[in-house]
Image (tube, rainbow, N blue to C red; front, side, top):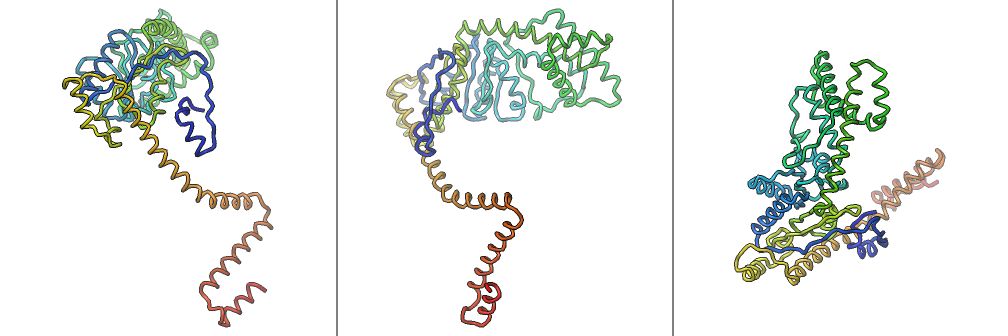
Amino acid sequence: MTGTAKTEEKEFLKMFKMPVIEVPTNLPNIRVDLPIQAFATLRGKWQYVREEVESMFQLGRPVLVGTTSVESSEYLSDLLKSRNIPHNVLNARPKYAAREAEIIAQAGRKHAITISTNMAGRGTDIILGGNPKMLAKEIVEDNVLPFLSHDTPDVETEGESTSHKGLSKIKLGPSSLALLAKAAIMAKYVHKSESNEWSFQKAKSTIMESIEMSNTIGLEKLQECVAEVTEMYPLCDAIALAYATVLKDCEIHCFDEGAEVKTLGGLHVIGTSLHESRRIDNQLRGRAGRQGDPGSTRFMVSLQDEMFRKFNLDTEWAVRLISRITNGEDIAIESNAVVKQLLGLQINAEKYYFGIRKNLVEFDEVLEVQRKHIYSLRQVILSGDSESCSEQIFQYMQAVVDEIILGNVDPQKVLYLALLFIYHF
């Protein structure tokens, strides 16, 4: 099951004899897919991407920018830093990938800007207003971790801290603040009483275990357990109770902020290049407008993008044409003729890769005959009794001996006749 197989329907049917059936959405899709904007140069494209991000940031709408490479994501990040626009980057570099869940958790919050490569964050819904469970986890870690361990986390394995600049502060109630303070005191007490220094990883895993316990048991059961013990109840119980209470506050905050974000228009997705398959473009578009939420998408492409150069688009001619239309300025072109030409090139790219996949399947069909024979023989040996296995092995031994003799001994000589007599009679 996949959400983007419809564009490859012919390939599935032709190569694998598998029809594609489209299942209606659970809720109506109200996402707005804005027209593709084409630019003559990369410089013009990135300038407009930055301006659109800044415009959405000022409105308060969350933005997800999809890039095709790590280098592109970091280039855009530098552009946004130059305009003091707070944002998070999510790409394959360990310092970002380690915080993937936390970055995605707040990608739907008001004023949130997220720059992501294709594969990053896939499979996780971006919840408008934020993910309360992940936000509650972050709050607990921020308040307890420094007291449990004084180790400095390794950025390459633990990731850089997630940026909260520009986002609204979550209001915690008195009970949440009191329980966080108590959990911090317990953490400090445990840290001092232990003879060995806690590592950062051990401290973090302890907090994670406590959070899992809280999610399993629930707030009411936790309160009952804590009521049965003294004031200095176990560390894990203290953390679990603090998390459960903070989670309630986060749920209220995320619900209210989510309603506000929906009023503003939902998540806005910007694609910075057409991909070599429409499926990947549709996957990026599909990050907005999930489960009936509002949202919008916009693709901004340059004639100097890698895909157009790779598939032999006469970029110099196209750049001159657009420059003539725009009087040499870096402005967007939404001409149907230009966009149709670019989409046609994308379809040609799909056909090219379809040919490669088709050749691979045809090549594999030859090997499949031998593969099936070997696996069937393996199954016979594994499921058969010792007598049938011995018989099978002797047959192969006989075949090997025959092959060696026929290939190395002259049939007219006495030795051949003697060997033939021994092995056949």
